[in-house]
Image (cartoon, rainbow over all chains, first blue to last red; front, side, top):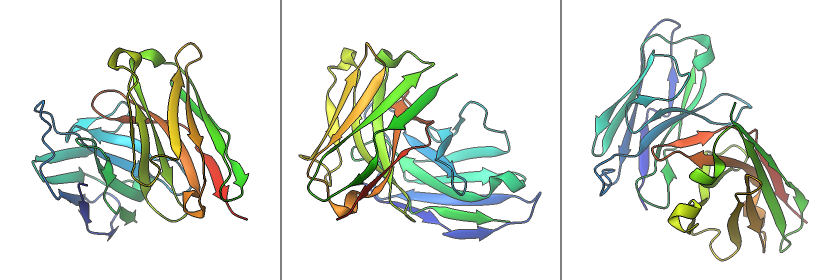
Amino acid sequence: DIVMTQTPRSSLVTLGQPASISCRSSQSLVHSNGNTFLSWVHQRPGQPPRLLIYRISNRFSGVPDRFSGSGAGTDFTLEISRVEAEDVGVYYCMQATQFPWTFGQGTKVEI
Amino acid sequence: DVQLVESGGGLVQPGRSLRLSCTTSGFSFGDYAMSWFRQAPGKGPEWVSFIRSKYYGETTEYAASVKGRFTISRDDSKSIAYLQMNSLKTEDTAVYYCTYYFGSGVRWGGQGTLVTVSS
């Protein structure tokens, strides 16, 4: 199984300031078709997860442009350019390149 | 508007069975693969199962922890996905989420359904 490792595990951020989360996979997430199926998911307290970013850097419908994703191969990053109050919660990276799909342990973002 | 509504959860004794349903609307259900995830209390999400569309033979994938006990299926005429869970264990206790896979990522949408396995 592909192991996903996120850092940091928690982050105390200031409103209006940037934040960054890293995710590393135990093996390359490049699929045989050339795509890299790395997503970022956000979960607010008491809410279901929701998709933020797919295929490394594509924002899902309705996701604010302060969220951006980057990376390649085994190293990926989620950045929030200016943190807002609604951004609190836990962020997970997830790989869907190979079954079983696996998640990072999560990064808790607090203001 | 895309809707994914999970149902069928509840309290069940170890060893018993439960069938979850995912009723969907707002997208062309038959064109997409469907997937179930779960989230145990205080834990992160865990992928459970996946079923491809009819075009791809409705083939399935399972997490090792549920293989042989859970069965995913779909009814394209009703736009519903199912998760049949047999021989339930206490470690299957979780909120179960239904999602669809749009080829590049997973679209979450429902509030999930809680399954509690306890004697």
